[in-house]
Length: 215
Image (cartoon, rainbow, N blue to C red):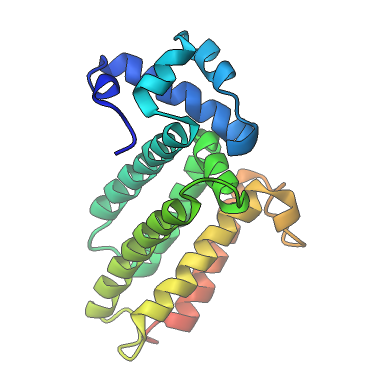
């Protein structure tokens, strides 16, 4: 556990203010360049309080990362529940569009993930990334399993391998949208929203042709 009882006993609005302030700093600067002085000034608390709440900078980062990831998980769980019964490729398309919405409406969440993905000196980095990838794998695998059970996917399809491929497509779509140097030639980074949505649909159509049952 990365937080003290003191932090857990704070009023909800104060906990939210601290986590949101830290999220902004880590999302803007990453772990290494983030300043605890900036965070405490932003949220209006004494610097010593941070060490009472989280022990150190790495504990604060880990809690903020979990806080951010939980927001994304809640969004995807809601989408998964609301889309039950729909075609698996429709659900994958909706998942891509949900990622696009999160990227545009809550950009700090994805910027924090990108810092964690590319900064090798972040404490607990492997554990944090594995937790995200495990959730993504399980989320996609459940969609694919339901699609296969409904005859929408090739019955001989290796679902574990298919989930790996689908997750790679979804993540690369978002990374290319967020980072220009990760978008060599597709034009996704600078695309208008309608074009970005069209590209999402085309990617899902490619997946349909490769994974579908042929019906």
